[in-house]
Amino acid sequence: MSAALKVGLRGEATAAVTEGNTALAYGSGGARVFATPAMIGLMENAALSAVDPLLEPGQMTVGIKVDVEHLAATPVGMKVTARAELVEIDGRRLVFRVEAFDEKEQIGRGTHVRFIVNTERFLSRAEGKLKGE
Image 1 (cartoon, rainbow, N blue to C red):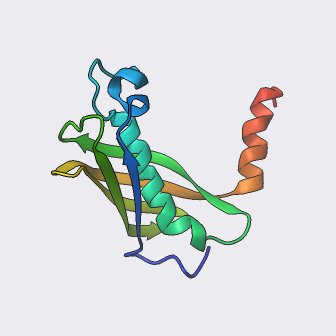
Image 2 (cartoon, rainbow, N blue to C red):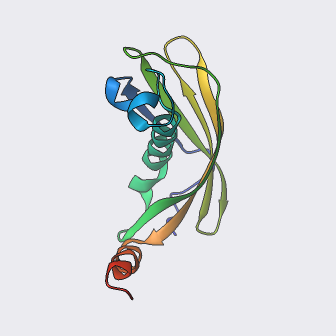
């Protein structure tokens, strides 16, 4: 594992709320507001940005757990920013505190867990499922 990974690393990701990332578009609700799955994806992206550039060659992280609350609705036209902070390292397991804010208030918070894997082995195993392996 990379020695550059340390508790306290932070990442951020931002997205505009568009028709394509609303609850209506995702099929996760009937409103034209930022979808919970889109918020979770943005939080994961923030966590990725905190650690993936520091990994050893041939490694990547994969999300294995998300525990978040979606606290407030954000309409089309606003911007959402997600932030992640690495709060725990347990071998290859990385735990992040995640938050999301629109231009007015906090809209989400929780934790996200990622696992460091060997990229080639991970992809080979996933592709093997298609071949019945």
